Length: 164
View: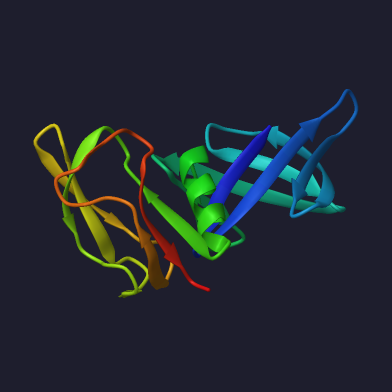
């Protein structure tokens, strides 16, 4: 089973494999044999690479808190949609797409304009609610595919930002 987490803005894929004899955790291509046992609702005993660990694990929505050896670590579970969006943005080109059938209300960044991470680039309206779509990368707007007033379908590319 594969899990995706965000730790300090970095995305990690963790694969948990179990066969009839062993359990392995694979992180960034490195397989680590582990043994684990649930002790209580939120308490686990883990043996990995000859070390015994006691972990307190509490899940609250997308946030996962792990308490180990006096330290608290916070993770965020990442959905497949967000993982795909983040990995696409890491390539240096981000396509801003309509999240649902909507109408383009305002183009906030035009062709050639600079964009910072988190800048709003376009506003769409669906079901009488406006949503400002933001860029996850910094760079320049290299293509604007719609005009204000256009009706668009879900998944339509509205604008493209490139960091290159």
